[in-house]
Length: 271
Image (cartoon, rainbow, N blue to C red; front, side, top):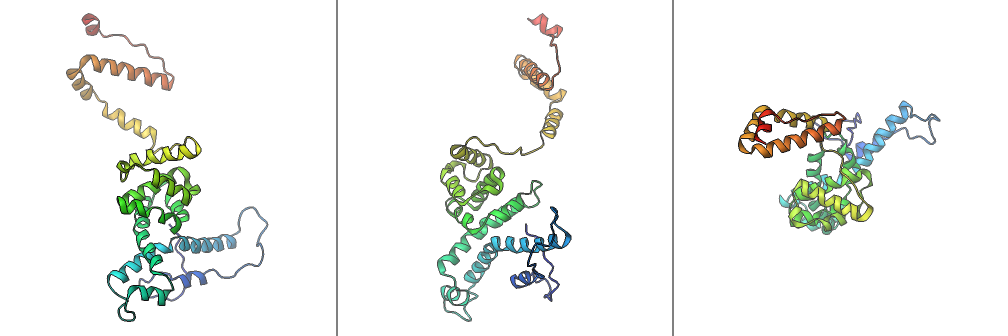
């Protein structure tokens, strides 16, 4: 997700960087372009890191805010200064109860999504942190309420796997509306539904491969051992011979190797 910024300021034990500290870390503001080189110089790279970290925090700040508001509301932590949670939101933070409720409803979806994409090799975590603002998260709330938070997270994940940084709020809304109820919460069915929806609005789209095809073939080959084939022959000799023959022909054609299949003596005799 967002990069960690060390502002060098005094902080209590375990206390995270505050928004104020993050803003103050963007210092030595340039009044013009610092360099004419196509590649950023060190000073520009450092400044860009700080600026983009602040922007990423802006996009996902509703996650922390919603989580905090729920804790304050459910634990009635406002009671020392305010009679109601609504008064607390209005008077202290200048936000309406309706907006506070939106923040509370969206944070669980966002947290689940970051759990799903954390450490992914295809950098999905970065894509989600840049795209999943509250406008897109709001479009997932109805799906989470009707089915589950997992269902909402899986749908958004299927969208960003295909569209990456091109995901829009309208796209999220349309995908939610197009998702069959029976597919909600099921990874494969959700991915297929998302592909179908995207195809309907912009033409055929394919998901990137979920795994290395060579490794998948290696695992399949290891499972296809002599013991498995022998057991299959005992159960259905003719069907097994046909499947093996078709498999050999398909594999040889795929890799450009000519194979001549001859019937074994026992098979010729039986024929």
